[in-house]
Length: 351
Image (cartoon, rainbow, N blue to C red; front, side, top):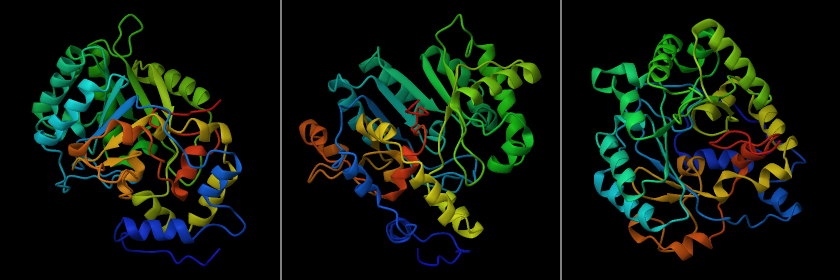
């Protein structure tokens, strides 16, 4: 592998990240495309459109160290109501879609967020709506304080990141005071019925490793989180999702600055699991960027790797047949989704 100098500056653009991912593979290791070929999965093809993921913008009230979106309070990219309406048209007619996944940034900071959730409920009452809530947004401003009630009224499934069940590790990754606010927000969600076995109000937590290593067993971590959060704070939640940090954006910057890039890539590549590769989320998911462009997954979106569907890369030029027959765009960051037990927005993909 070429000697990779630690970069002290922020990566300039997605092209720079792709150059690193494409040229700086550990010596003797095959690329992700080559690994897929070896297990008979190249080109990687969709299995059907089931999850419609919408990025409502990169604005966020937090600046997390591992954030692959590079989100923060200073980001101005926000999905417009016009783009949302185009998405709603697709959600209404594509009956194979069983889940609409709203993400960001903090999706709630989009001024049309509540309108969008209500409209999804109107056009597809039966569809599952997921909101990826960072928890602290509920306490960030009085206008967000009633989000738990709004989520309950619209039968929203809440997915929230909580790096650990202690303040030290959580605040180190997500910012000073985040743990305390997250605990308060979780209590607010519990108080309206989320996490209760006797309701259908689902709240799932997300665990991302805080360093250059793979997550441990999802089942074991879930059991530990449930035990500690109940004993210490009387907090309940439904499931814990483990998600591997992919080597892009802020996490890639961290890997380069800390000199961990080579070792981390070796870990990901060595842990390639063909079973996890078969179940990668891009096969049944489509990611819609804040500006309406289509991507195979949220990670490809951050690298500006649009779907390979000529003349149909934007929601305004939707073509169901072309989307279903496309070959999925892959690169070496995809090793993060196929390492060990696999990784997706819904947690581990293989036993």
